[in-house]
Length: 306
Image 1: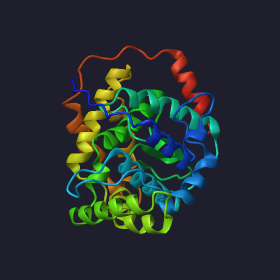
Image 2: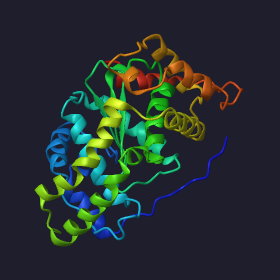
Image 3: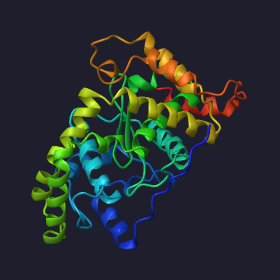
Image 4: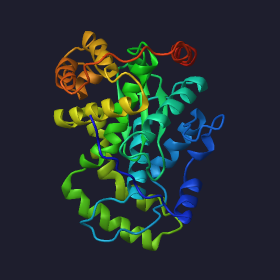
């Protein structure tokens, strides 16, 4: 099982400076963890994301794909919208652990770099769900983490969401009719409001942000997209050295709790049994090496209060 690595070019110094000033993400570095997404920052993200803040560069042609920078701002606004109804889990150890694990997995993905980097947060919800926002802001509920019995399975959950980000499934949810409008307004506002006209940019993104948020929280991705993210997760797990079958193990637990018509993952995801059947055919048959005891101890220490 191999996949071609695809890397995103690193942004320039001026662009990075803009990102550092625009949001609390870099301020959330915990114990040297570059990707930590702190609890205090979640509130700031909500306030900043409602406005969608600055755009660093004007768009070229409206028919071109969104740049990594534009994807970052759209994803941040989507995350802010989700945080409007979902509370962060008040446990720094759990969030630090999720970020350390998530960064390792993201580095092994086909898209190890995004404009703003990958950031992970536990949501204080009993629902079984997770949200991978464009650009790399990933949130996982306590309910889904409770379906995980070890670090390999937590890694599988994160790798699946990283797969969605890497494959840009979120941006694909934007209605094609909006692409021209949003790109045009971005170009105009980027040129005339370099200092950050918050209200104008908020309106520019609202339709696209709504499309993505509705997909993540109401409609769900297509069966094909979920299959692609599952396959990407298996590749990531193998690269890092986790059990590639861990995702099917989590899905089996989720299947026991699956209630058609439910309000959590049953509303936005295909039946877990169908996903297990599709993924199993792609997994290696050999049994993985036993996980070191330190791995389980680390998992228990970080997520024992979930």
